[in-house]
Length: 336
Image 1: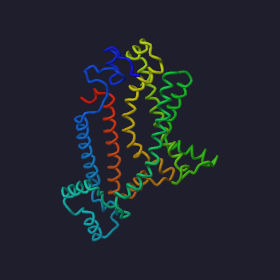
Image 2: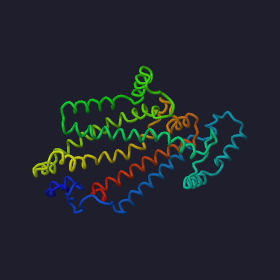
Image 3: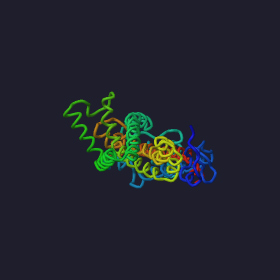
Image 4: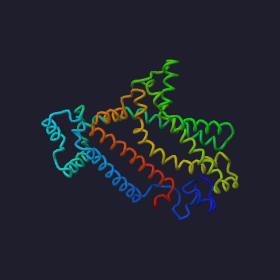
């Protein structure tokens, strides 16, 4: 059954929810128009171009990448051969055009250390990282959204627990949580393996550690949003019309409280992939994070550039999808 129509004043606080009408006549949420998506896509392309340009410039600001890589411990003739092999003997503008052309065809270059194609290396490693990041995101949503909602609606001990747990997980570094879980479940109880990749048992501890901080963050945000929505005019109006409390929360409160969560889901996905370096190092997980760290330590610039671009694309794509989802839920966003 559709939610009853609310007065205009209440509708202004609850756009796109139930049968309410946005103040400017946009109506309820629907398909996002193509012009809105086009604007976001143009912004995406501009930011991506800036990212690509920065990744091209940074290694060259430090001097000759070949000399930095070899630390000068190589014959000049060998240096020149390497510079020719990697196209560093050409003028910088030519290098930049060739660099952009390679990106458009999916060619990220060759690893200086291993000789493998950077694209192949990234594809192999990022799949392993996604087997941690995707399940951890599901764990976060399954735990944080209900916990934050219940804490705001019921209050009492569950609210104290949710706030306390959130403060603890936001205060403790994730590497400490990882070491603690390894000690308890791997060393003392010997229930789970503590390093390497393999079956489901190898995934469990890294997934829990990756989910710990986001659970705390999402829980606090969800609690704050639900509490704010519960005291809004449109909720008071719905209650005055005799709508049951469960229906009020489900139809009106949650739809508005979830808007910031939608944004965070998109933005956090790329940062989770990029931020997996510490967790993968602690658990000796052969993923994207350990590949990036190894490339930095070895000064393998093609891999560093490819890794930075991958994280940037994930963050930008997540932001674009979050904007589109936000525009679907709240029609007012489309005209900004």
